[in-house]
Length: 293
Ligand code: GUN
Image (cartoon, rainbow, N blue to C red; front, side, top):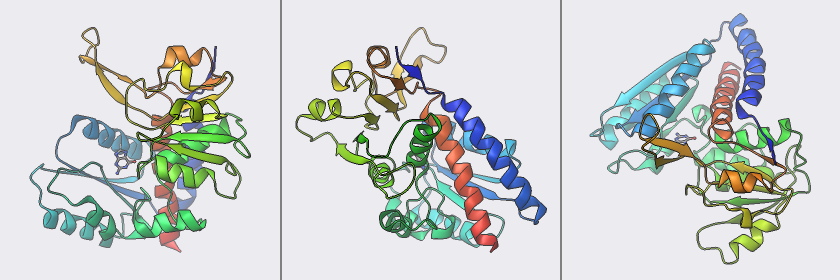
């Protein structure tokens, strides 16, 4: 049976560090500020935005929560982003993805001040990740996965990491992050996706499997070699009449069968999720530090 990698406990260690950083910034008269923008009323997005706002309050950061109607136009949203770009008390801005279909998400991301782009989605931050410039912002979920591996003592350097999924939010930046010439990286990275041939053959050759494809229970025991480390990024709602809300959350990994073979595995919930929010707070503190110089 695999060792459980406890994302909540590791996130708590991160918060202990961040609280010290925040206290130092406050002694210099700086309160890090984060604005989270939600357009529409997607229930999962609302839940994420609520937990980000709550975490800002717990850490005593300045928090702006903008909830805009699903009918918000591109121009209205751009105007709000530009206001936040100009607001000196806001150091980080996050526009929750995905927005409603009338919104051109790429144009919104390009309108963000890259220095406040704590999601790391702006082209200039993507470029900095590619070239290895540490002044940029790296997306929070990839950072959280890397930190989980480091803090749980997994050797990433030289390991074969197979990433399932090539999204702009997780798969692609995660591959770039783990192949960098840096501590906690130096991995041999393979990215597989929905069109990959021999997917299971490739994932079976991994020392570390990271699943970020957004399909419930996609990764089965047959995808994983004995003794591999498995990181599950997925958060999928599946119907469950016995659950209080009528659904429960499961990852991209068929947990029970994969845990029989893996050396270590992250649960869902309580694995990558808490780390993503911790890394958002960390990026916000980094943004406030950079903007105060
Ligand atoms: N939707 C799912 N994950 C994320 C994220 O990390 N950032 C934003 N902005 N939206 C998301």
